[in-house]
Image (cartoon, rainbow over all chains, first blue to last red):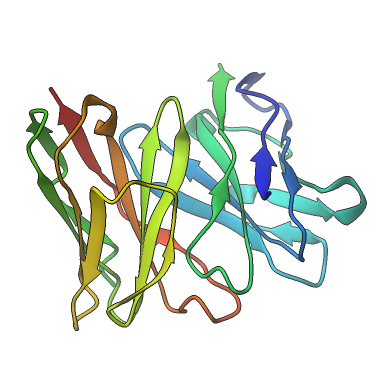
Amino acid sequence: AQSVTQPDIHITVSEGASLELRCNYSYGATPYLFWYVQSPGQGLQLLLKYFSGDTLVQGIKGFEAEFKRSQSSFNLRKPSVHWSDAAEYFCAVGAKNQGGKLIFGQGTELSVKP
Amino acid sequence: KAGVTQTPRYLIKTRGQQVTLSCSPISGHRSVSWYQQTPGQGLQFLFEYFSETQRNKGNFPGRFSGRQFSNSRSEMNVSTLELGDSALYLCASSLAGALSGANVLTFGAGSRLTVL
C-alpha cells in the first residue's frame, strides 16, 4: 500500500539555522512527490514537486528537496530559516494515473525561535 | 488570476443534518479534488471530478458525495452528519485529469465544518 511517513511531528529551529524535514514514502511505481506548506487557518501551498529528471529540485521561498530512490526519501531543506517559515509542512506522493489523488504524510510542524 | 474559492469558509451543523460545500476552481482547470483534514487522520482524499465525471474515489462512506458542473465548479455533500465529520474540507483544482501525467494541485483555503 502507498504510504508517506514524516518521522518528525514537531521541529524547532533557530532563525537563521538550516532546516531539514524528512519524508519517506512507500510506493510501487515511480512516484510523483510534493511538498506543501500550510499556515494556520489556510489551505496548502505547493513548495516544490518532483516528477522525473534531476533529483535535486528547487522550490519557492528558498526551499529545495532531494529525491533518493535507494532510500525512498524526499527530504526538504532550507539553508537559513526565517521566522515566517513557521508552519506545518506536508509531504505527499502521487502517481501518473492517479490524477488528483495524493497520499499525504501526517505533517511536520515547524517552530522558529528568534 | 483568481485562486480556488471555497464557500462557506465556516459553518456549524448539528448531528443528523446535511451540508453542501462549494468549490470554484481556477479558471481553465477542469479537475477538482476534495480532501478532508482532521487532527487525528490528517489529510485524506475524498474524490476527484474531471469533466463532470468522478474519476477517483477515496475510502469514505456513501454519506459523502460530490458532483461537478459544466463550468467545472464542484460541490460536495455530507448527509446525516456525525460528530466525526468535523473537519477542514479542502478543495483543489488542477489542469490535468486522472489519466494525465503530471498533476499539480492548487488548494483553496478550505471550509471548516463543526458538527455539534
